[in-house]
Length: 468
Ligand SMILES: *[C@@H]1O[C@H](CO)[C@@H](O)[C@H](O)[C@H]1NC(C)=O
Ligand SMILES: *[C@@H]1O[C@H](CO)[C@@H](O)[C@H](O)[C@H]1NC(C)=O
Ligand SMILES: *[C@@H]1O[C@H](CO)[C@@H](O)[C@H](O)[C@H]1NC(C)=O
Ligand SMILES: *[C@@H]1O[C@H](CO)[C@@H](O)[C@H](O)[C@H]1NC(C)=O
Ligand SMILES: *[C@@H]1O[C@H](CO)[C@@H](O)[C@H](O)[C@H]1NC(C)=O
Picture 1 (tube, rainbow, N blue to C red):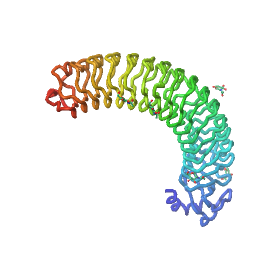
Picture 2 (picture 1 turned 60 degrees about the horizontal axis):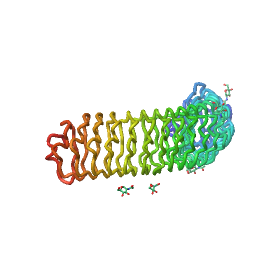
Picture 3 (picture 1 turned 120 degrees about the vertical axis):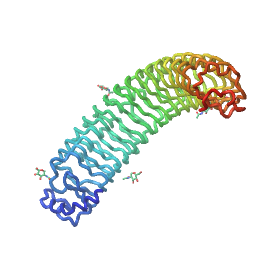
């Protein structure tokens, strides 16, 4: 697009470029110019992939778009007389190096977009003078590390995006001098070590994204000063353990994502202090029998707890103690063969319970007793052979019940009779050969039923029900 515009503006350029203030290669002589970049702000020339300013820029320029222009470096003074510019877009160029104070003429700059360049290193001082900068985009560059004070002095910076670099080494004061930083994005890097004070000055931080790095352990004081933190993403690292008290200084954390790590044991106190956490992702770990009693005791605001596919074999009776506000519990894809008595007893507000793809062979008759607002219960793909007659009797809010793909060969009389809100019932793919007259006692005739692929066809017993 810029090339096309360049062709249109070449004539204008030659005229415009006669009274040039700083003579730059190509400015006075259109024939030397390899590429002309026209923007509303004035004229910039690219010669040998070096950017030159050509002529007096417009004093009204606030948004300078030099994206995808093949720029490799800048000539000295290229940003002269652009002190009104608030947004500088350099995305998609080939810049690999930035000089000291490279942007210090741009005193009004609020957004600096350097996304998708090839920057390999940042010296402390590169961003000197950018005291108004709020948003610094450095994602998809070639950074391998950050030195001390890399961004120091950017008092207004609220968002720093370092996504998808190759950062492995972070100096302990890499993020010093950023008192207003709200969002620090470091996903898709190669960080394996974090110094315990590295985030300690970031008193305004609300979002910290460390997804997809190589972290195997975290120092206990790492998040100690992040009192404003609301979202912490540690997805897809290699964490094996978490130190007790690691979240003691983050009382405002609402979303904690620890999915896809190698966590095997979580001791009481690991989640101590998480009094506001609402979403907790623990799926795709390796807990086995390593979940301690009272683990979530501080998390009384928790609404959604994700623990699928975590190799859970055994759960303590008191593991969910204190989760008074839990609405959704995902435990699918584990190796649970039984559910201890009372394990869900405090979960008075649970609406969705997913236990599919476990190894459950039987259920205790009062295991779901207190789940009176439960609307969805997934028990499919287990090894259930029988059901206690009263196991569902208190589930008066249940809307959908999934029992397909088990080993049920009979259903007790009236087993569904308490399910006054049921709309869909699945018990296909079991070993049933018939249903007794009283099996479906109490079930409303509006319930839709899926009973296909049992040991014998069951349609004759279900004539008054709609199939799903
Ligand atoms: C910058 O602006 C000043 C005053 O408007 C002018 O004298 C000077 O030549 C300009 N410099 C450039 C490089 O355009
Ligand atoms: C930056 O990384 C890309 C992709 O890994 C690579 O193709 C490019 O050569 C690197 N640039 C520099 C200056 O190292
Ligand atoms: C923690 O933050 C407070 C202010 O929010 C600051 O005074 C203190 O120095 C910080 N601690 C560290 C270790 O940086
Ligand atoms: C899952 O648990 C079983 C039994 O405790 C164990 O043998 C297996 O190694 C575990 N798998 C992983 C990936 O940790
Ligand atoms: C699942 O349960 C069966 C029968 O109780 C048992 O033999 C098997 O070892 C269990 N599998 C796992 C992975 O726990």
